[in-house]
Amino acid sequence: MSFLRVLLAIIFPPLAVIGKGCGSFLIVLLLTFCGWIPGVIAALVILNNPN
Image 1 (spheres, one colour):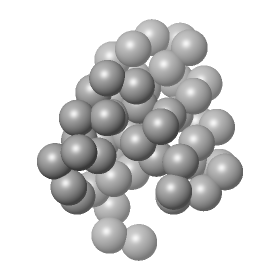
Image 2 (cartoon, helix red, strand yellow; image 1 turned 90 degrees about the horizontal axis):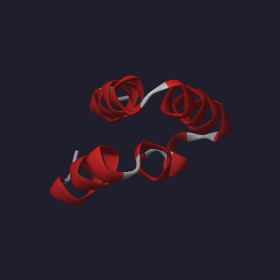
Image 3 (tube, rainbow, N blue to C red; image 1 turned 30 degrees about the vertical axis):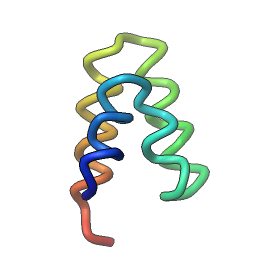
Image 4 (tube, rainbow, N blue to C red; image 1 turned 120 degrees about the vertical axis):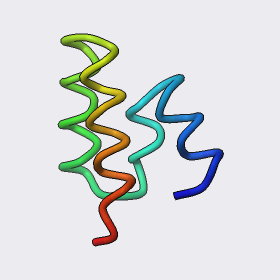
């Protein structure tokens, strides 16, 4: 997990996980629309997952 991805996850979470697949992107996008904090948390969890 690079510093740039973490910073991007804090600023705009869907852009940070766009390389992880369409499903991850849509989940984070939906959570970001519900609230910024859930989107950030989901993006950081997805980025921290090694798979």
